[in-house]
Image (cartoon, rainbow, N blue to C red; front, top):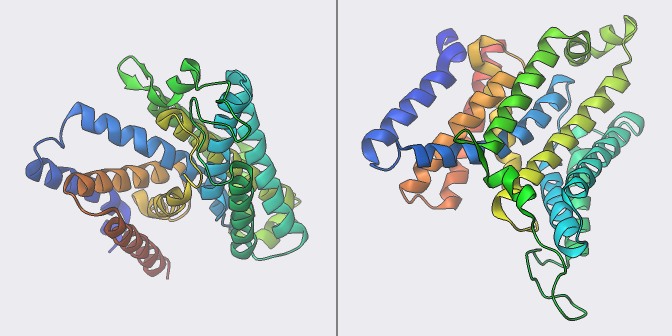
Amino acid sequence: MKFLYKYGTILAIVIVIAFFSLTLDSFFTYANFSDILRSISIVTLVAIGITFSLIVDGFDLSVGSTVSLATIASASALVLHRQELLVALIVPLILGALVGILNAFLIIRLRLPDLLATLAVMYIINGVQLTYTKGFSIYNDMPLPEGGVAPGKFIPSFLFIGQGELFGIPFSVLLMLLLVIGAHLFLTYTKTGRLFYMTGENREAAHLTGIPVNRYRTYAYVISGMFAALGGIVLASRIGTGQVSAGASLLMDGVAAAFIGFSVFGIGKPNVIGTLLGSIFIGVLLNGLTMMNVPYYAQDIVKGALLIFALALSHMVKK
């Protein structure tokens, strides 16, 4: 059991890659692995945000709707309002931070349970984006209700984020790795990062030692919202449209990746490196299932089963 808890995720990644490589001719190719890495780059960004909320003993269910909101915000800035790259990046990040502040206010000030508060915020954000778009996606040359077509378009510099490459490596993957390394170093080797963990491990003890617990909990939810918004930016630049509810499926993927990461190397707590490996495992598995023509609705069963297994294994070892 201890061996599986420490090395089960890495072993599972190796087994899944070997199985699909032997059964699918086009699986073990550069093009396919490039697609896998592009897809997990978005999931990993969302999962890092969830990891920060878990570190402070919280949970953020609003990340999927925040991804959708950021996707719509970026597309709207470019296509409907004809803005440049800077605005298309800053506006979604500000919205993500505001979602995090709203979550923190409900959880910390109003003392609502984090699951219920972030669930309510998830529905509110979904309603906001659907009201704003009237249920339609935003894309180049889209017709406007008042007549004519949208004045702007997705500019090449924005599309490069999700579609471009540097040195033969997708830019979104390089961005993901940079943020994973930065977040890992921050949480592991800085005083502030250690205070995040202390806040989550024993809130009362942390408060008695003088740590501003509520401040760090607020920081965690703001960081979660901003990482989800960054995932929405990458998603919009990858698909070249602003699709309503585009981030709905990313919630379950991000949660599964974060919880699978608990067991990597037996760390037993939320950590960014484990979250990355959890994202890789989910990405490889779903890619292989898709190539085997497994229906997308059946893949949700697999993701749910993985989440149950990760939670059960973590609980048994901890107990």
